[in-house]
Length: 361
Image (tube, rainbow, N blue to C red; front, side):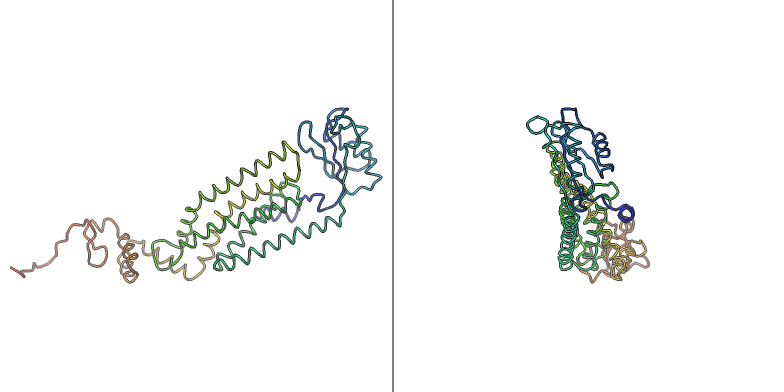
């Protein structure tokens, strides 16, 4: 998280044209003068306008591949001049297989429009987090609610940090995918917390396991379910990426699938290795859990066996069974009573010491 926060603060994000504004020009790579490469297109752009483009990328492959040029906002004269230069250099082929200037398309997005898109994206993210916080607050006790909300923050920061570190482009589709995977992560965390809540209900009335051990058991019980759910979620995402990159060459689908892939991995990790350990760390700072943990650890000491057995007499049959199970094996074999005055099952009868009684003779 520290690496992600530093990258976000120092490096920032690579925003798409929809957020920052600018001009985008698309052209088929196949032309009468050969196949256009990224370097060749950059050279034509620089010679024609006297400045470098912000980015030049290839989308798709084979005959349907296109090259996309993104730059700062160009006026109509500059855009037309660039189209003429690209046509003269590459003679791109249109859908009919003939060289055509119409095969070169351009689009412009103003900075005002980009600002509006940014505000709406942040608003959508804020609404989601508020609704999630309301649900979690009413669904769980305060420590579980705090852990679940901090897990959402962990997922958000980590996913955003990966985009910042690697330099993936942030588009409106990225924001949509981010909201989707935050919902997935919350769902996975709720599944684990439901089991933790079930295992730790009334934990203070038994000394069989500590709170941390009960929570760890819940994670183990839901581990395979979390992994299987994540694998099933990843399969269609990978299929979407294959379709987007190798078949259709659609950038929007790629942006949507990429953030979902990163988010599912981060969300699965956080629900198992972050949410529950954080919950345990918070609960272990309370007097109730600290006192209970000491009782459990003291009961496990050989010297405290008899004391733990007598302490749980008033706790019911379940605690009596735990006290009986806590007696060391060598004590049972030697004839030491397990609970109260009852000998342990299978123990040899002990012969009373001292003067034999003559009663009944």
